[in-house]
Length: 383
Ligand SMILES: [Zn+2]
Ligand SMILES: [Zn+2]
Image (tube, rainbow, N blue to C red; front, side, top):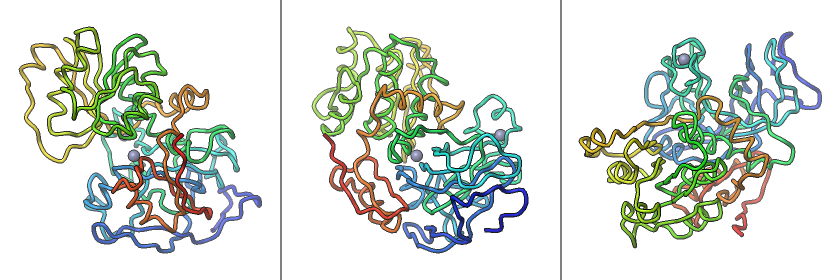
């Protein structure tokens, strides 16, 4: 790496000039290549990536392209490196950076907004009005710029979250997922202690949504889903009730479990065809429905019911308003154990295997993590 006068490095972390990086070729095709180690600019640091979790959105990008947006279009055959749920160690500081130190462990948010549009100024940098405009300073790791399936990446300091030594690499990759659930429930939703919450869909965001809601004092917290093994983890993360929608009508079950009434919030994480209609019938008048899943098809929605019952319906993109910092605080204070959703770890070189485990839910995989430093493939004990 050209260290230049203004970039700070340390002999403790010698930097190579090139690194291993996975790049997306045609749809579904990942190739291991070499890339130049990037150089941090003003307000940026270089992070050595120690662990990166695979997200359902990565699987979507690798197979179908969207929602990644590279040079204004699909991300295929553009030397693009996906991956966005990573953590690591700061190994170089860009010009003027003194907010972090070399050797510090951090986890990273996905989005650095442009910082100059109306939404960024409101703290909603995941909804930046200059989304994808690199010349305006917008970055979204693994979406509009290179991400974490490699050994090093540059990050704006505003995307960094410091983590304590006691937090494992694997747990730290889950901060952004918990932060996404938190952004939907509190920053956008205004959840306060004692309010009732339903989470539909026990994927990673849903399961950590249960954990965050419970840690914030929501009651009751009800989780709905189709897989008993995942509902069981939801219980361990604090769900007061779980409903298997294969055996029970979800709307009726929720009302029964909440004393015959609708709940204050639904966090919709299933993307199921009838999920929005179910959600608006689970909330009470004036209740809020946060949509956190990407369904594939358009769905018919009972709009008259939304109007009649004054229901708030809002989408959530990522982890705005620094919600990840609050999620990290709950995690480092052991208010919930996010590692319950981490099931497997593979070496970075085995990324295609790791992706297959995550996509096909091999061996009941939930969160699959890859690590650059040689690790043997392992199944993490769930108990
Ligand atoms: Zn993700
Ligand atoms: Zn912006």
